[in-house]
Image (cartoon, rainbow, N blue to C red; front, side, top):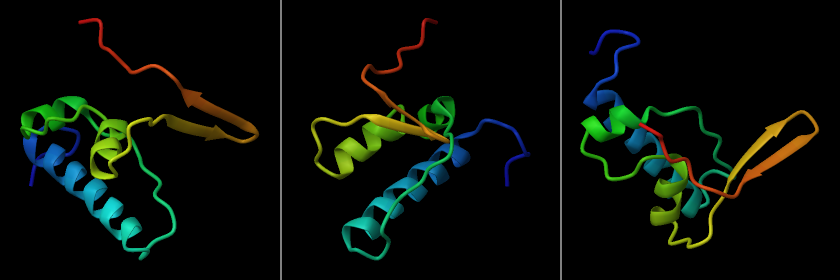
Length: 88
């Protein structure tokens, strides 16, 4: 296994597979909701995954054209309208 805290292709592949498995379970009504943690964009890239974030993965695997990221912090609800584009 990779060293703890190291960015690697294996970590990116595992993250991608976990998200796509959750989507499949939800589509089959085996689960009622999906909650995600952070994923590392660099690890996804190292694994050869074409997607850069959760939203792109969910969009493709649910055939959704208009998706947003939703954060909840106590009584605050946040929807991100724009995509994250790194400056460097």
